[in-house]
Length: 253
Image 1 (cartoon, rainbow, N blue to C red):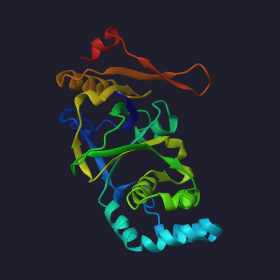
Image 2 (cartoon, rainbow, N blue to C red):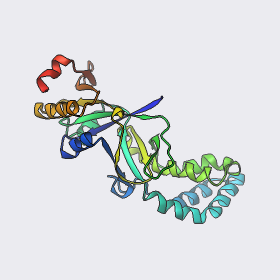
Image 3 (cartoon, rainbow, N blue to C red):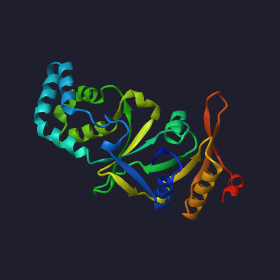
Image 4 (tube, rainbow, N blue to C red):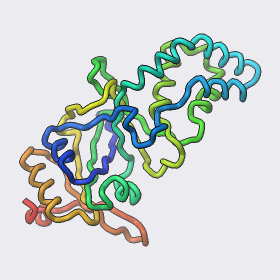
């Protein structure tokens, strides 16, 4: 089965330990994301800008779809506010992510491998995993680029694609995160198969006591994961992952 790896940077605290023991990951509500304008794009405004930028047939198509979707736009804006988002990074050796989200290298980074297709029918399921696009005008650009396709799209394809774009677009200032997102139909803690946690990595400054705590819990909970630590790479500011051997781990048990 194809999988999509995502790395979660976290401090070592009670919430982390509970998530490992309970085999859960937490999906934030859109209103609790750390960027208050994340996932809060005004769809009507984006339509108006795209219509103004377009001309001819493209402009006609966008005007038609804006009018046809007027009621649906309100439903989309209301509906997505009840979704949940789990955010991870596409890379494990990102200095800024270690600094900002893993307690200045005192925390850890966890690798989760999600199935490539995780769309489910029930309301508690994960419904998709997508990389984040970083751009100034994601919805305007998407509408403009798809204006010619509007007549061939049905009323389910267009809104579904629009919702994905809304939930997986961020301002360019966040580009350093190299983010991927797992989307759920609702927020909160959700059980995740033990096998999806495949690796944990300690930072440059993770205290020995915290390393020992995490390693003991992984062993007690019978996780089969590789355990790594961040080391300095050969070039001046580089970071690399080094897998720890059984000999290096034995003092932590």
